[in-house]
Structures are given as C-alpha cells and as structure tokens.
Image (cartoon, rainbow, N blue to C red; front, side, top):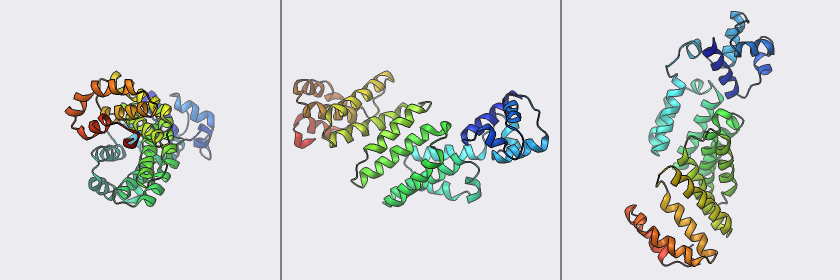
Amino acid sequence: MEDISGKIRKRRKMMSLSQGELAEGISSQSSISRLENGSFTISLGEFVRVMERLNLSMHDVFCSGEKTPGIIVREQLDAARKEQDYDRMEEILESERSGFWKQSPELEGYRSWHHGLVKQSKGQYRMALRLINIAIEMNQKNEWMYEAVAEMHLSKGNIFSQMKYDALDSYKEAEKYYRYSDQKSFKLIIKILCNLSISYCRKNEYEKALKYSNKGINILQKNESTYLLCETFYNKVMALIALEETKEALEIIHQIEYLYESHQKLNMLENLKTYSLQNI
C-alpha cells in the first residue's frame, strides 16, 4: 500500500487540504493519517469517498506508470507555451469540456492561466490579468505548483510591462515562488532575474539591477548556457554605465563582442559601444 498511500498524501497536499479537512464527514483524521502511512484501516465505502473528495479515480490510484488525461493535457499546454503557440493553446483549451478542468485546482488553474496567455496574445490585457490572477489564487498555497505560480507571476509582470505599468512587484513574487519551488528550470529564473534587472534600471536603482544581472550570469555559467546571456550582460553594462563604472563596462563590451555577433544581437552591441545614459 506504500505507493497508493504516497499518491493520496501527495494529492491531498496538492489540493491544500489538511488531514482533518480530508477526513471531515467521512472518517477520522487518525484514519487518514494511517492511510497515508500505508495502513488500510478505513472501510471501502470511506475509501471511495476519500477518492471522490480528492478528485481521484481508482485508475489514478491503482495504476502506475500511466499518465492520466489531466497530466497529458498539462504537458500539451506546457509545450504550446514554450513554443508561444497561442493557436495550439486555444485549441487544447477548447478540446475539453468544462467539467474536465474541475478535476483539481491545479488543472483548473492551468486552464485559467493559459486562457490569460491567449488573451494577452490578442492584446486583451485586462482580461488576461484577471484570468492569471484567478490561476494564482487557486494555486498559491499549493507547494507542488510553486514553480508554475512563479511563471504565472512572470506572465503577469510581462503584461504590466506591455501596458507600460510598473511590473517590479510581479517579478519579485515570481522570484519568491521560484525559491519556494523545486527549482527545476534554470531558464525560468533567468527570465525572472533579467526582468528584475530591467525593472530596477527603469527605476534608476542600478545597484539592484547589477545584483540581479550578476546572479543571472552566475546561474548561466553554472549551467554552461548562453540562454538570454546577451540580454543579461546588456543589463549589467547599462547598470555599470549609470554607476560610472566606465572602465569595467568597456572591458565587458570588449570581452562579449563575439557573443553578440554570434547571437545576431548587433543592435544591442552598438548601443553598448555608443554608451550613454540616453541609451539606457
């Protein structure tokens, strides 16, 4: 029963339920505790009601190694989001009936989040923000969804930026939830740090902008990656220029010239070579 008990415990935590809340009206908290520890002491009827409260089917619990439809759809949305394929995203969202998405808070949150991204792609920013806020509210206490919540806050910040509003608080929330998460995607934190650096530059808080640029560069070096490296160095040099650290800024420009050329970012390189506060 260890595998089954683990699935039940994981699902309860995903739904932000205490053992007492899961047991309410069905069994006792101690019975749920024993169930999660591999001791099957509740009746079959009680077990079925526990599964219903957790929105789990018998297939979910007793079959291992097979992906449930909910997991498959989430993976499809992840792939569409990665490719910024909003038509595909909309197609996936419309392929399932409303009842399908209500299986769990995380699945319903995924639906709201990706609806928001589709609205953003169409320039419907206020509706996009409302939908993403709903998704965040559904999953902000769900420790299994913290990395997704970090990306939701990143999306929210990007929408604020498109609306010419201050996005700094959203990017701070994104970084906070990323720290809380299992931190599987270094590319996500690079996006967050890059946007934090840009936001602080816009506020003329260049020491902080430099701090986040340096954090991003360290992570990229650790992962032997050039993902957003041009943009991250750009933010760093802008901050150094504003802080009148001209010598260091020029040294970096000389060292990374080939990087910009190889990534076809020559327009950014030209801005750095003709540096001035007006270019920042």
